[in-house]
Length: 273
Image 1 (cartoon, rainbow, N blue to C red):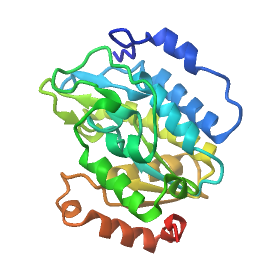
Image 2: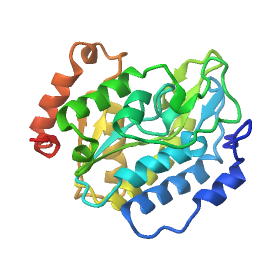
Image 3: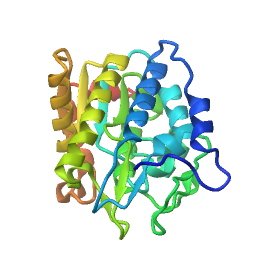
């Protein structure tokens, strides 16, 4: 069973819920956060067996920094939603921000706030929040690429936003990161069906015209979710994932991503010139 409570001196789940469950005011950011809170409530009812031993939800313990990210950058006028799959142990799990490599989050995105801790932590996967010194390669590549293209984050977020389909990170007893595709089929489908429905709410809240899945799995889930919900006015595309597990990404992810975004007509939205 998921347990979103925190440890140490951090506020417990009930206090956190009281703090974040404010009525939506109709803005894209408030509608976005409301959809995430509703998803969190549903995810708490799921159970996972082996090989999953630890589950972290940064939309619980890192809500402060996540809300800072959303309220700062989830403004009207979005055209493109970049969609990742789920948090990485040294990215969003630490910062509450998708692809949230700490230096990019602090130095470029200028995100601040308190980060708590999950109720149970793997000894090899401690949550250190914005003080984490381990760099996440995928996040460093992702945000570093857009920093080069856009100069300032406001240029990127004029038309674009970044979101993860699933907010949960899963680990085995050894501390190995388990992605949703690696979960047992029945558990995976229960999880992703809830995440698919939440994605449709997010797309509606942002009123984007294009979803770009970062990696094949995110692209396929986005296409499936929107098609099943009858959303026909949103284009779904994909770009290579920047993961170091991907040999092609290690040979020059930025060049591949730039060429793909040019083909999709997205590059002019990102240029600071």
